[in-house]
Image (cartoon, rainbow, N blue to C red; front, side, top):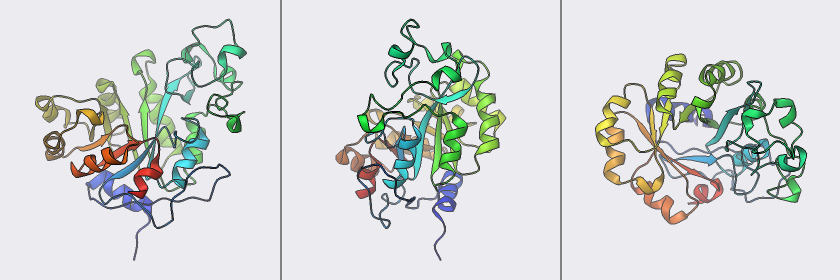
Length: 284
């Protein structure tokens, strides 16, 4: 008897078992490559959609997150920032300029930092036209909206908390929302390792990932609270992956869309690969 994808992914995140994963949701009305329902990633490698299926839909939007499921992802990664009124939204950059029309809607508010705008103001912005005319009118989602949308899928989440030092208390606010609105497989990560230490105290049952490439000498101390070390793929060697895994941590590496690079990383036995095009990894 086959276990559900959610059960398998929960097992992987909590025990380190290496099992291939597949996740498919109802087809979306978005034109993009899909994979057959029987397709999946190579055994032991979790297919993580970077900012959703951001190669085919505007990053960090509901459209991109749901499309990741259609393209065969096992997890979705997205970025969380805080607005001026402490709302949690999905946004990678410190400013709104690259991925919204904020410059035309609020021309006198340069440099258009996320932290300078309220949620109500951000809801006025178009977060899709920069990517393509078919996404005109797409909005910046809140964390709660993203969690509710993803709860309709069987995908796990890799949630990155952006620049916590700019938003004191964001770890606590994120923990509150995640407890309230998410009950599936979950990892929380950040480049700020102290913030992840704090988050671990708030939600000790949720694995935390440390973005970057700590030295081999640092790994043992970090293993006291971290469940993952998540470096850029160019930093990885086979020996480094083994060093991390020997301490009970996992390696999710970022970000590549190149099948050759994916195969090499698979040969290193990494635990997960972040990609903008999850259908590429799913088809390998």
